[in-house]
Length: 357
Image 1 (cartoon, helix red, strand yellow):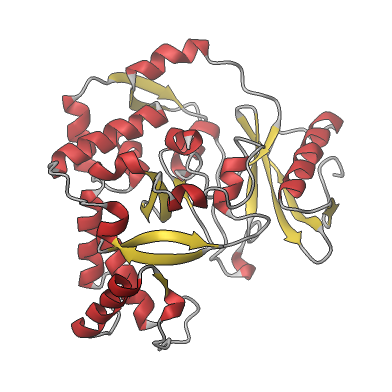
Image 2: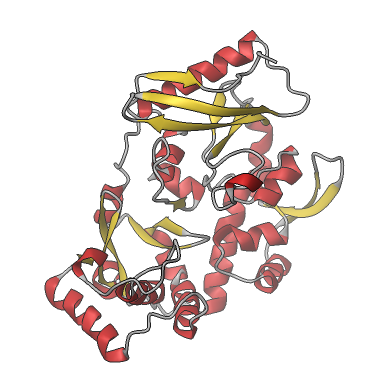
């Protein structure tokens, strides 16, 4: 919970490439963490699940300031900006009534059929469940494996509207964002949660005790930002970053803002999971490699459960980074740790590795 509170939220994802994103993100900060343990914090209500930039686990203390997001996303879902369930209001009410009477149910408890052959097509009942979930009418009670169980929002979340104005909620979210980012542009502050607007972020900055600073960028440019005063006080006392190489998950909240990452580190990253294979530059599930305060490369790796191995199928060093024996050894050590976390016994390179070129 301390890690998730420090991050602000934990994005979750269904793909189990080596391990699922939420488990990898937590393990990368605490090697004593084990898979799926985060779900107990959802079940006992330390966390609630809702939508930031995607489905995320959010500390419950943020809930009083999240009412605006339930209203905003519920309205978008009702307008059909994402999808329409195609069900009549009486049918949607019947789904809710079943949950009210029977308790938490997953999508598997309902049997409407998918009406499209598109890859991401959902059956009408799933669309209706998610429309109510966005609005807070339903909420995630718990997950089993990765299967979501829906319950009434009032039973999971309590009374969502705590009487705080939308403006007060936005102010609190902006303050929480800057406290975590430390130094940021107005755009980075509003993008942190995905629950406010650029105008609200600029207004908050104008009214609050933040410190104007110029941020030097990787390309030698300068960007006007603001800083959290407490963050500036801590900066001189921070320890030097470890030289250990870290395998970063693409969904890590600290890495999610790709433009910020490129501005600060000069590291360009594009998630190519949904890019046709022929158009990919790197690969399907590609992990950035962070060494200290520098991105030194990226690799594509996947668990081969049948063989019990972590298979590395692609490796791309960053320009100007020399991969000598020491750096290669640190990467091998991290790959070994990552493999063990995923329940795998060995690492196999199926491509040319660092130091081979």
